Length: 448
Image (cartoon, rainbow, N blue to C red; front, top):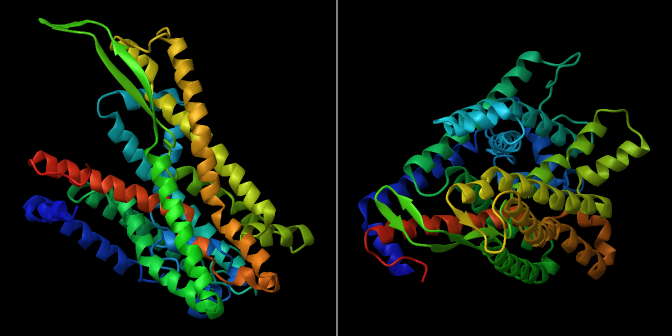
Protein backbone atom coordinates (compact mmCIF):
# COMPACT_ATOMS: atom_id res chain seq x y z
CA UNK A 1 0.00 0.00 0.00
CA UNK A 2 2.90 2.36 0.79
CA UNK A 3 4.34 1.72 -2.68
CA UNK A 4 0.93 2.39 -4.22
CA UNK A 5 0.77 5.74 -2.39
CA UNK A 6 4.23 6.59 -3.69
CA UNK A 7 3.11 5.72 -7.22
CA UNK A 8 0.05 7.94 -6.82
CA UNK A 9 2.21 10.83 -5.59
CA UNK A 10 4.54 10.47 -8.62
CA UNK A 11 1.65 11.11 -11.02
CA UNK A 12 1.39 14.91 -11.52
CA UNK A 13 -2.37 15.03 -12.10
CA UNK A 14 -3.15 12.76 -9.11
CA UNK A 15 -0.72 14.73 -6.93
CA UNK A 16 -2.40 17.99 -7.95
CA UNK A 17 -5.83 16.55 -7.11
CA UNK A 18 -4.62 15.50 -3.66
CA UNK A 19 -3.01 18.87 -2.96
CA UNK A 20 -6.14 20.70 -4.13
CA UNK A 21 -8.30 18.57 -1.83
CA UNK A 22 -6.03 19.33 1.15
CA UNK A 23 -6.10 23.05 0.30
CA UNK A 24 -9.92 23.16 0.24
CA UNK A 25 -10.06 21.32 3.59
CA UNK A 26 -7.70 23.91 5.10
CA UNK A 27 -9.97 26.69 3.81
CA UNK A 28 -12.96 24.93 5.41
CA UNK A 29 -11.15 24.72 8.76
CA UNK A 30 -10.32 28.43 8.60
CA UNK A 31 -14.01 29.20 7.96
CA UNK A 32 -14.98 26.99 10.90
CA UNK A 33 -13.24 29.48 13.21
CA UNK A 34 -15.08 32.59 11.95
CA UNK A 35 -17.86 33.21 14.52
CA UNK A 36 -21.35 34.49 13.82
CA UNK A 37 -21.95 38.11 14.81
CA UNK A 38 -23.56 38.69 18.20
CA UNK A 39 -22.62 35.38 19.85
CA UNK A 40 -22.18 35.58 23.63
CA UNK A 41 -18.86 33.79 24.16
CA UNK A 42 -19.50 33.32 27.89
CA UNK A 43 -22.79 31.51 27.24
CA UNK A 44 -21.15 29.44 24.50
CA UNK A 45 -18.39 28.41 26.90
CA UNK A 46 -20.97 27.62 29.57
CA UNK A 47 -22.84 25.29 27.19
CA UNK A 48 -19.74 23.22 26.42
CA UNK A 49 -18.35 23.20 29.96
CA UNK A 50 -21.66 22.27 31.60
CA UNK A 51 -22.31 18.95 29.91
CA UNK A 52 -25.26 18.13 32.17
CA UNK A 53 -27.34 20.85 30.55
CA UNK A 54 -25.81 20.83 27.10
CA UNK A 55 -26.32 17.12 26.68
CA UNK A 56 -24.55 14.94 24.11
CA UNK A 57 -26.41 16.27 21.07
CA UNK A 58 -24.33 19.45 20.75
CA UNK A 59 -21.13 17.38 21.08
CA UNK A 60 -22.25 15.19 18.17
CA UNK A 61 -23.22 18.25 16.13
CA UNK A 62 -19.80 19.75 16.84
CA UNK A 63 -18.03 16.53 15.84
CA UNK A 64 -19.85 16.29 12.51
CA UNK A 65 -19.25 19.99 11.74
CA UNK A 66 -15.51 19.84 12.35
CA UNK A 67 -15.57 22.18 15.36
CA UNK A 68 -17.71 24.84 13.69
CA UNK A 69 -20.47 24.46 16.30
CA UNK A 70 -18.03 24.94 19.20
CA UNK A 71 -17.10 28.32 17.72
CA UNK A 72 -20.67 28.98 16.54
CA UNK A 73 -19.09 29.62 13.17
CA UNK A 74 -20.71 30.94 10.01
CA UNK A 75 -20.57 27.34 8.74
CA UNK A 76 -22.00 25.83 11.93
CA UNK A 77 -24.79 24.27 9.82
CA UNK A 78 -22.18 22.34 7.84
CA UNK A 79 -23.48 20.74 4.64
CA UNK A 80 -26.46 19.05 6.29
CA UNK A 81 -29.12 21.37 4.78
CA UNK A 82 -27.93 20.15 1.37
CA UNK A 83 -28.10 16.52 2.52
CA UNK A 84 -31.64 17.12 3.81
CA UNK A 85 -32.65 18.71 0.50
CA UNK A 86 -31.15 15.76 -1.41
CA UNK A 87 -33.15 13.31 0.72
CA UNK A 88 -36.34 15.31 0.09
CA UNK A 89 -35.90 15.13 -3.69
CA UNK A 90 -34.97 11.45 -3.64
CA UNK A 91 -38.25 10.81 -1.83
CA UNK A 92 -40.32 13.15 -4.04
CA UNK A 93 -39.06 12.08 -7.49
CA UNK A 94 -40.88 8.69 -7.55
CA UNK A 95 -44.02 10.28 -6.04
CA UNK A 96 -44.39 13.46 -8.14
CA UNK A 97 -44.86 12.62 -11.87
CA UNK A 98 -43.55 16.01 -13.00
CA UNK A 99 -40.24 15.51 -11.19
CA UNK A 100 -39.97 11.97 -12.54
CA UNK A 101 -40.41 13.26 -16.10
CA UNK A 102 -37.77 15.93 -15.52
CA UNK A 103 -35.30 13.36 -14.22
CA UNK A 104 -35.72 11.08 -17.25
CA UNK A 105 -35.31 13.76 -19.93
CA UNK A 106 -31.82 14.80 -21.18
CA UNK A 107 -30.17 17.09 -18.65
CA UNK A 108 -32.86 16.25 -16.11
CA UNK A 109 -30.43 15.19 -13.39
CA UNK A 110 -28.74 18.60 -13.59
CA UNK A 111 -32.13 20.30 -13.14
CA UNK A 112 -32.91 18.19 -10.08
CA UNK A 113 -29.48 19.09 -8.72
CA UNK A 114 -30.20 22.78 -9.24
CA UNK A 115 -33.54 22.47 -7.46
CA UNK A 116 -31.71 20.74 -4.60
CA UNK A 117 -29.48 23.79 -4.19
CA UNK A 118 -32.55 26.04 -4.10
CA UNK A 119 -34.25 23.93 -1.41
CA UNK A 120 -31.01 23.82 0.62
CA UNK A 121 -31.40 27.58 1.26
CA UNK A 122 -34.67 27.42 3.30
CA UNK A 123 -33.35 24.22 4.93
CA UNK A 124 -30.29 26.19 6.08
CA UNK A 125 -32.52 28.92 7.55
CA UNK A 126 -34.62 26.35 9.44
CA UNK A 127 -31.53 24.54 10.72
CA UNK A 128 -30.02 27.83 11.92
CA UNK A 129 -33.22 28.59 13.87
CA UNK A 130 -33.27 25.08 15.33
CA UNK A 131 -29.59 25.17 16.25
CA UNK A 132 -29.95 28.47 18.11
CA UNK A 133 -33.03 27.09 19.93
CA UNK A 134 -31.05 23.99 20.99
CA UNK A 135 -28.26 26.17 22.38
CA UNK A 136 -30.72 28.34 24.29
CA UNK A 137 -32.30 25.17 25.69
CA UNK A 138 -28.90 23.70 26.56
CA UNK A 139 -27.88 26.63 28.78
CA UNK A 140 -30.52 25.62 31.31
CA UNK A 141 -30.43 29.15 32.82
CA UNK A 142 -32.54 31.07 30.32
CA UNK A 143 -29.45 32.78 28.89
CA UNK A 144 -29.42 33.35 25.14
CA UNK A 145 -26.56 32.29 22.90
CA UNK A 146 -27.25 35.38 20.74
CA UNK A 147 -28.87 38.09 22.90
CA UNK A 148 -31.66 39.86 21.04
CA UNK A 149 -32.12 37.09 18.46
CA UNK A 150 -35.73 36.38 17.53
CA UNK A 151 -38.85 37.86 15.98
CA UNK A 152 -40.81 38.72 19.15
CA UNK A 153 -41.16 41.94 21.10
CA UNK A 154 -37.85 43.34 22.25
CA UNK A 155 -35.89 41.35 19.69
CA UNK A 156 -33.33 42.89 17.37
CA UNK A 157 -34.73 42.23 13.89
CA UNK A 158 -31.63 43.46 12.07
CA UNK A 159 -29.40 41.16 14.14
CA UNK A 160 -31.76 38.22 13.55
CA UNK A 161 -31.78 38.73 9.77
CA UNK A 162 -27.99 39.20 9.74
CA UNK A 163 -27.38 35.96 11.67
CA UNK A 164 -29.73 33.89 9.50
CA UNK A 165 -28.29 35.36 6.30
CA UNK A 166 -24.71 34.77 7.44
CA UNK A 167 -25.30 31.16 8.49
CA UNK A 168 -27.20 30.42 5.25
CA UNK A 169 -24.38 31.95 3.18
CA UNK A 170 -21.87 29.89 5.18
CA UNK A 171 -23.80 26.72 4.37
CA UNK A 172 -23.80 27.49 0.64
CA UNK A 173 -20.07 28.29 0.85
CA UNK A 174 -19.40 24.88 2.45
CA UNK A 175 -21.49 23.18 -0.27
CA UNK A 176 -19.51 25.05 -2.94
CA UNK A 177 -16.23 23.88 -1.39
CA UNK A 178 -17.54 20.32 -1.51
CA UNK A 179 -18.44 20.65 -5.18
CA UNK A 180 -14.95 21.99 -5.94
CA UNK A 181 -13.43 18.86 -4.38
CA UNK A 182 -15.77 16.62 -6.40
CA UNK A 183 -14.87 18.37 -9.68
CA UNK A 184 -11.14 19.01 -9.22
CA UNK A 185 -10.04 16.88 -6.27
CA UNK A 186 -10.26 13.27 -5.11
CA UNK A 187 -13.46 11.68 -3.79
CA UNK A 188 -16.97 12.92 -3.12
CA UNK A 189 -16.58 16.51 -1.92
CA UNK A 190 -19.50 16.64 0.50
CA UNK A 191 -18.41 13.40 2.15
CA UNK A 192 -14.78 14.56 2.30
CA UNK A 193 -15.85 17.79 4.04
CA UNK A 194 -17.74 15.85 6.73
CA UNK A 195 -14.90 13.31 7.01
CA UNK A 196 -12.30 16.03 7.57
CA UNK A 197 -14.43 17.62 10.28
CA UNK A 198 -14.76 14.33 12.15
CA UNK A 199 -11.04 13.56 11.91
CA UNK A 200 -10.14 17.09 13.06
CA UNK A 201 -12.29 16.82 16.20
CA UNK A 202 -11.61 13.19 17.18
CA UNK A 203 -8.19 13.82 18.88
CA UNK A 204 -9.63 16.68 20.94
CA UNK A 205 -12.56 14.52 22.07
CA UNK A 206 -10.21 11.65 22.94
CA UNK A 207 -8.03 13.94 25.09
CA UNK A 208 -11.15 15.23 26.83
CA UNK A 209 -12.30 11.65 27.47
CA UNK A 210 -8.97 10.73 29.09
CA UNK A 211 -8.53 13.90 31.18
CA UNK A 212 -12.03 14.61 32.48
CA UNK A 213 -11.87 11.58 34.84
CA UNK A 214 -8.18 10.72 35.46
CA UNK A 215 -9.01 7.77 37.71
CA UNK A 216 -10.92 6.12 34.82
CA UNK A 217 -8.58 7.07 31.98
CA UNK A 218 -7.31 3.51 31.34
CA UNK A 219 -10.84 2.10 31.44
CA UNK A 220 -12.09 4.79 29.04
CA UNK A 221 -9.13 4.29 26.68
CA UNK A 222 -9.60 0.50 26.54
CA UNK A 223 -13.35 0.91 26.05
CA UNK A 224 -12.79 3.45 23.26
CA UNK A 225 -10.34 1.15 21.45
CA UNK A 226 -12.67 -1.86 21.74
CA UNK A 227 -15.69 0.13 20.50
CA UNK A 228 -13.74 1.64 17.60
CA UNK A 229 -12.16 -1.63 16.43
CA UNK A 230 -15.38 -3.64 16.64
CA UNK A 231 -17.42 -0.85 15.04
CA UNK A 232 -14.97 -0.42 12.15
CA UNK A 233 -14.94 -4.17 11.48
CA UNK A 234 -18.75 -4.26 11.57
CA UNK A 235 -19.05 -1.18 9.32
CA UNK A 236 -16.68 -2.69 6.72
CA UNK A 237 -18.48 -6.06 6.73
CA UNK A 238 -21.98 -4.57 6.52
CA UNK A 239 -21.15 -1.70 4.12
CA UNK A 240 -19.33 -4.04 1.73
CA UNK A 241 -21.81 -6.91 2.11
CA UNK A 242 -23.60 -7.70 -1.17
CA UNK A 243 -26.33 -10.17 -2.12
CA UNK A 244 -25.77 -11.18 -5.76
CA UNK A 245 -28.94 -12.04 -7.68
CA UNK A 246 -28.03 -14.07 -10.82
CA UNK A 247 -29.19 -12.63 -14.14
CA UNK A 248 -29.10 -14.14 -17.63
CA UNK A 249 -29.26 -12.31 -20.95
CA UNK A 250 -30.54 -14.16 -24.00
CA UNK A 251 -28.94 -14.10 -27.42
CA UNK A 252 -29.08 -10.52 -28.72
CA UNK A 253 -28.58 -8.94 -32.14
CA UNK A 254 -27.34 -5.35 -32.37
CA UNK A 255 -26.93 -4.16 -35.93
CA UNK A 256 -24.74 -6.68 -37.73
CA UNK A 257 -23.34 -8.09 -34.53
CA UNK A 258 -24.72 -11.05 -32.60
CA UNK A 259 -24.11 -11.46 -28.87
CA UNK A 260 -24.18 -14.87 -27.19
CA UNK A 261 -26.03 -15.56 -23.96
CA UNK A 262 -24.39 -13.88 -20.97
CA UNK A 263 -24.55 -14.48 -17.24
CA UNK A 264 -24.35 -11.59 -14.81
CA UNK A 265 -25.76 -10.55 -11.44
CA UNK A 266 -27.51 -7.69 -9.65
CA UNK A 267 -25.54 -6.55 -6.56
CA UNK A 268 -27.94 -5.66 -3.73
CA UNK A 269 -26.11 -4.13 -0.77
CA UNK A 270 -26.94 -5.11 2.80
CA UNK A 271 -26.88 -1.41 3.67
CA UNK A 272 -27.66 0.50 0.45
CA UNK A 273 -28.38 3.81 2.21
CA UNK A 274 -25.18 4.47 4.16
CA UNK A 275 -25.47 6.73 7.21
CA UNK A 276 -28.29 8.95 5.89
CA UNK A 277 -31.14 7.34 7.92
CA UNK A 278 -29.06 7.73 11.07
CA UNK A 279 -28.43 11.44 10.43
CA UNK A 280 -32.07 11.97 9.42
CA UNK A 281 -33.31 10.29 12.63
CA UNK A 282 -30.85 12.34 14.66
CA UNK A 283 -32.28 15.54 13.16
CA UNK A 284 -35.94 14.57 13.65
CA UNK A 285 -35.54 13.36 17.23
CA UNK A 286 -34.49 16.83 18.43
CA UNK A 287 -37.83 18.38 17.43
CA UNK A 288 -39.78 17.34 20.60
CA UNK A 289 -37.30 19.23 22.81
CA UNK A 290 -37.40 22.29 20.56
CA UNK A 291 -41.22 22.31 20.46
CA UNK A 292 -41.46 21.79 24.25
CA UNK A 293 -39.16 24.77 24.82
CA UNK A 294 -41.68 27.04 23.07
CA UNK A 295 -44.39 26.37 25.71
CA UNK A 296 -44.55 27.50 29.37
CA UNK A 297 -42.57 25.28 31.80
CA UNK A 298 -44.35 22.22 33.13
CA UNK A 299 -43.77 18.66 34.27
CA UNK A 300 -44.40 17.15 30.83
CA UNK A 301 -42.39 19.81 29.02
CA UNK A 302 -39.45 19.44 31.41
CA UNK A 303 -39.47 15.66 30.97
CA UNK A 304 -39.46 15.98 27.17
CA UNK A 305 -36.64 18.53 27.27
CA UNK A 306 -34.57 16.40 29.65
CA UNK A 307 -35.13 13.20 27.64
CA UNK A 308 -34.80 14.44 24.07
CA UNK A 309 -32.73 17.57 24.65
CA UNK A 310 -30.04 15.91 26.78
CA UNK A 311 -30.23 12.48 25.06
CA UNK A 312 -31.02 10.54 28.22
CA UNK A 313 -33.10 7.56 29.22
CA UNK A 314 -34.57 4.43 27.69
CA UNK A 315 -37.33 6.40 25.95
CA UNK A 316 -34.85 8.48 23.97
CA UNK A 317 -32.57 5.63 22.93
CA UNK A 318 -35.47 3.29 22.15
CA UNK A 319 -37.12 5.97 19.98
CA UNK A 320 -33.80 6.69 18.27
CA UNK A 321 -33.28 2.98 17.51
CA UNK A 322 -36.80 2.52 16.08
CA UNK A 323 -36.58 5.71 13.99
CA UNK A 324 -33.22 4.67 12.54
CA UNK A 325 -34.51 1.20 11.63
CA UNK A 326 -37.72 2.63 10.15
CA UNK A 327 -35.95 5.28 8.07
CA UNK A 328 -33.50 2.65 6.79
CA UNK A 329 -36.31 0.42 5.50
CA UNK A 330 -38.20 3.37 4.01
CA UNK A 331 -35.16 4.93 2.34
CA UNK A 332 -33.91 1.58 0.97
CA UNK A 333 -37.36 0.92 -0.50
CA UNK A 334 -37.34 4.32 -2.23
CA UNK A 335 -33.79 3.92 -3.56
CA UNK A 336 -34.40 0.46 -5.02
CA UNK A 337 -37.71 1.64 -6.50
CA UNK A 338 -35.98 4.59 -8.19
CA UNK A 339 -33.55 2.25 -9.95
CA UNK A 340 -36.34 0.45 -11.90
CA UNK A 341 -34.24 -2.73 -11.99
CA UNK A 342 -37.04 -4.99 -13.30
CA UNK A 343 -37.87 -2.59 -16.14
CA UNK A 344 -34.21 -2.17 -17.07
CA UNK A 345 -33.66 -5.94 -17.13
CA UNK A 346 -36.71 -6.52 -19.34
CA UNK A 347 -35.71 -3.75 -21.73
CA UNK A 348 -32.24 -5.25 -22.16
CA UNK A 349 -33.47 -8.82 -22.58
CA UNK A 350 -32.34 -9.99 -19.16
CA UNK A 351 -34.16 -12.16 -16.65
CA UNK A 352 -33.64 -13.82 -13.28
CA UNK A 353 -33.63 -17.63 -13.67
CA UNK A 354 -36.92 -19.10 -12.47
CA UNK A 355 -38.63 -15.68 -12.21
CA UNK A 356 -40.89 -14.25 -14.92
CA UNK A 357 -39.87 -10.81 -16.29
CA UNK A 358 -41.94 -7.78 -15.33
CA UNK A 359 -44.08 -7.67 -12.19
CA UNK A 360 -42.81 -11.01 -10.80
CA UNK A 361 -39.20 -9.85 -11.12
CA UNK A 362 -40.02 -6.53 -9.43
CA UNK A 363 -41.72 -8.30 -6.51
CA UNK A 364 -38.81 -10.73 -6.15
CA UNK A 365 -36.24 -7.90 -6.05
CA UNK A 366 -38.31 -5.99 -3.49
CA UNK A 367 -38.77 -9.00 -1.20
CA UNK A 368 -35.06 -9.84 -1.39
CA UNK A 369 -34.14 -6.24 -0.66
CA UNK A 370 -36.41 -6.15 2.40
CA UNK A 371 -34.89 -9.34 3.81
CA UNK A 372 -31.28 -8.21 3.53
CA UNK A 373 -32.14 -4.64 4.56
CA UNK A 374 -33.31 -6.00 7.92
CA UNK A 375 -29.68 -6.81 8.75
CA UNK A 376 -28.49 -3.38 7.60
CA UNK A 377 -31.30 -1.59 9.47
CA UNK A 378 -30.61 -3.47 12.70
CA UNK A 379 -26.90 -2.71 12.32
CA UNK A 380 -27.55 1.04 11.88
CA UNK A 381 -29.90 0.99 14.86
CA UNK A 382 -27.24 -0.60 17.08
CA UNK A 383 -24.58 1.84 15.82
CA UNK A 384 -26.95 4.72 16.66
CA UNK A 385 -27.41 3.70 20.29
CA UNK A 386 -23.78 2.82 21.11
CA UNK A 387 -23.40 5.97 23.31
CA UNK A 388 -26.53 4.95 25.22
CA UNK A 389 -25.21 1.42 25.75
CA UNK A 390 -21.86 2.79 26.95
CA UNK A 391 -23.69 5.11 29.33
CA UNK A 392 -25.69 2.15 30.68
CA UNK A 393 -22.51 0.10 31.20
CA UNK A 394 -20.89 3.05 33.00
CA UNK A 395 -23.91 3.42 35.28
CA UNK A 396 -23.74 -0.28 36.20
CA UNK A 397 -19.97 -0.31 36.83
CA UNK A 398 -19.85 3.11 38.51
CA UNK A 399 -23.27 3.49 40.19
CA UNK A 400 -22.08 6.25 42.53
CA UNK A 401 -21.23 8.44 39.53
CA UNK A 402 -24.49 7.79 37.68
CA UNK A 403 -25.90 11.17 38.60
CA UNK A 404 -22.98 12.91 36.93
CA UNK A 405 -22.82 10.70 33.85
CA UNK A 406 -24.67 13.24 31.73
CA UNK A 407 -22.00 15.86 32.42
CA UNK A 408 -19.15 14.03 30.73
CA UNK A 409 -18.38 12.58 27.34
CA UNK A 410 -18.32 8.78 27.13
CA UNK A 411 -16.24 6.51 24.92
CA UNK A 412 -19.10 6.09 22.44
CA UNK A 413 -19.12 9.82 21.64
CA UNK A 414 -15.44 10.35 20.78
CA UNK A 415 -16.41 9.31 17.26
CA UNK A 416 -20.15 8.86 16.96
CA UNK A 417 -21.77 5.94 15.14
CA UNK A 418 -22.61 8.07 12.12
CA UNK A 419 -19.08 9.46 12.26
CA UNK A 420 -17.55 5.99 12.05
CA UNK A 421 -19.74 5.07 9.09
CA UNK A 422 -18.75 8.29 7.31
CA UNK A 423 -15.03 7.87 8.03
CA UNK A 424 -14.89 4.23 6.90
CA UNK A 425 -17.08 4.88 3.85
CA UNK A 426 -15.04 7.89 2.71
CA UNK A 427 -11.73 6.07 3.17
CA UNK A 428 -12.95 3.09 1.11
CA UNK A 429 -14.43 5.33 -1.60
CA UNK A 430 -11.28 7.48 -1.85
CA UNK A 431 -9.04 4.40 -2.01
CA UNK A 432 -11.16 3.04 -4.86
CA UNK A 433 -10.82 6.28 -6.79
CA UNK A 434 -7.05 6.30 -6.31
CA UNK A 435 -7.05 2.63 -7.29
CA UNK A 436 -8.81 3.49 -10.56
CA UNK A 437 -6.31 6.29 -11.26
CA UNK A 438 -3.37 3.91 -10.74
CA UNK A 439 -4.85 1.02 -12.71
CA UNK A 440 -5.46 3.33 -15.70
CA UNK A 441 -1.73 4.02 -15.73
CA UNK A 442 -0.74 0.33 -15.41
CA UNK A 443 0.26 0.54 -11.74
CA UNK A 444 -0.73 -1.99 -9.11
CA UNK A 445 -3.45 -0.57 -6.88
CA UNK A 446 -4.17 -0.67 -3.16
CA UNK A 447 -6.54 -3.62 -3.11
CA UNK A 448 -5.40 -7.11 -4.03
